[in-house]
Amino acid sequence: MTIEHTLTSEEALAGLDVDQLKQLVGLVEYDEKNDPFPVTGWDAVVWVVGNAAQAAHFFQSAYGMDLVAYSGPETGNRDHAAYVLRSGGVRFVLKGAVAPDSALVAHHSAHGDGIVDIALEVPDVDRCISHAREQGAVVLEEPHDVTDEHGTVRTAAIATYGDTRHTLVDRSRYDGPYLPGYVARTSTYRKRDGAPKRIFQALDHVVGNVELGRMDEWVDFYHRVMGFTNMAEFIGDDIATDYSALMSKVVASGNHRVKFPLNEPAMGKKKSQIDEYLEFYAGPGAQHLALATNDILRAVDVLRAEGIEFLATPDSYYTDPELRARIGEVRVPIEELQARGILVDRDEDGYLLQIFTKPVGDRPTVFFELIERHGSLGFGKGNFKALFEAIEREQERRGNF
Ligand SMILES: [Fe+2]
Image (cartoon, rainbow, N blue to C red; front, side):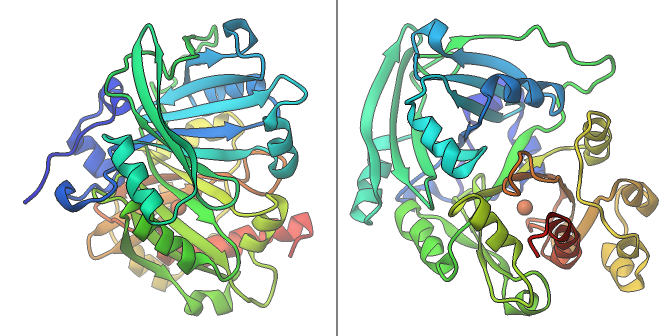
């Protein structure tokens, strides 16, 4: 028996339909009946940054997002400024401290710009929290209602790795621009002539970097507390020994709408990219967000024109006969991918195109992936070697290798 997929309010607003989402992020059918922690989809990715006003400009001008809501001193929030941006079904909330004694100051001082909250839309906050508590999760916020003239949101929060949390949001009785306390706000920023309506349409996955030796504990956390299941992709010792060392497993919500690859560092010949992250983020945290696009070539061209830098892929990636054979037939000539440094991975279900940016902020921590899926439900395991080599060259330039 299968259950119809439900769109989150953001996805519906963005005009996405279920078939588009299936293609973009690889949804699967599943039976919600036995799910102890049903998840509708992503609600928001909440960032703490050093300067939210400037970050909001960056995500509009470079990443083509739209400003939709705001909270700050002008709206009665004397603690911080928060800008809500959207692209398709993706919502970012950028928070920066205003009050010198805001809790965000300490967060930013410890971690730099990064993701504090991977918020999820759920149909039943109380049911999720009661299951999570039973399973030993740390409940940071008890279920409660917040109300304004747009209606009522029921929300709660649980802790996950590091200083990261999952806020759970039921917004079925709410039609405001984001949450109570926020006002609708647009921007005077205008996209360039000919710019696409949006560069990316959906969030595919969020990767967490966790402590050495604790990946399986966190995999177990997502199994027990949130009812997530394992996806096939597993990066183990074979890759860890030869290339920048990491181990990785992937957990997903029942319908695969929400996917969390979890990395831990492994002993390698040199310092692992995960170790570098853990050092500069001062602990576990979200490593990269994969943004799903239906035209990765155009996305890369537009982002590059705005000054976004991507990891370089060696030409040998495209000329190596073994790799070439693995790539097979894709929707564009290989030369088009090579010109942009776009990677290809293939499995029994199809293929995917992907590329990774350099870190977003000053610290070598969080970065983006762009992903265009063509049937493959994977994460680019076959590209780890090529990707590692590229990241290692960057690490070397920073003197952290
Ligand atoms: Fe990824």
